[in-house]
Image 1 (spheres, rainbow, N blue to C red):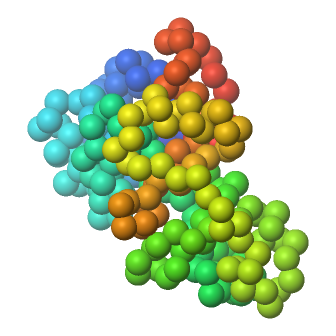
Image 2 (cartoon, helix red, strand yellow; image 1 turned 180 degrees about the vertical axis):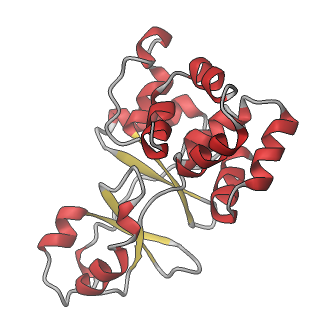
Amino acid sequence: LPDDVAADTLEMMNAARQRQVFEELEEEQALRLLELMAPNTAADLLSSLHTQTTKRYLEQLPQRQRERIIELLRYPESTIGAIMTNDFVYACADWTVRGAREELRERLENPDFIYFIYVVEDEKSRLLRGVLTLRDLISADDDEPLRDIMNPYLLTLNPLMPVRDAAYKIINNNIAALPVISKEGKLIGVVTVDAATAQIAPENWRSQMPRVFS
């Protein structure tokens, strides 16, 4: 299979089968697929391997992917930080709609989850200020600043929140995803309804669930 198709196929497998297939791959191919996989899925896979094997792969990955995976690996499995993705799209509150379209064109190509665009104060602090949808971005007037069209009323999650509590919060609010913020208010991740549902669905259902966002 071409690498992009192989990576998608690997992501769709249940954890046991995923590890079994991954361990059969040549290391060069395994690294290529890890680079293409969503950081949260790659982190889950690597956490199931022997510690030295995980370390060897991490050392060989490109810096950006390595940093994103390590960021996720530091959260305990029982917390929401362990199932969030840090592969999301954000924009700055003072950008105009026209400017945001230009800035985000390339960023929108790769993430699995692009239904929401999170609006932050600036790129350095990444303090969460609001959210807008792709429809908002497409339909708004070119010269409007994002802070004027964003929704500033957000439900958020703490990365150390128990995973099942967070999963029910997402599902009960009937929302596609919720942002995860640090205690300082910095946007650090997103948990999709797919990831949430997988945490509370019966084990024998999880491998049959369709993926919508992740």
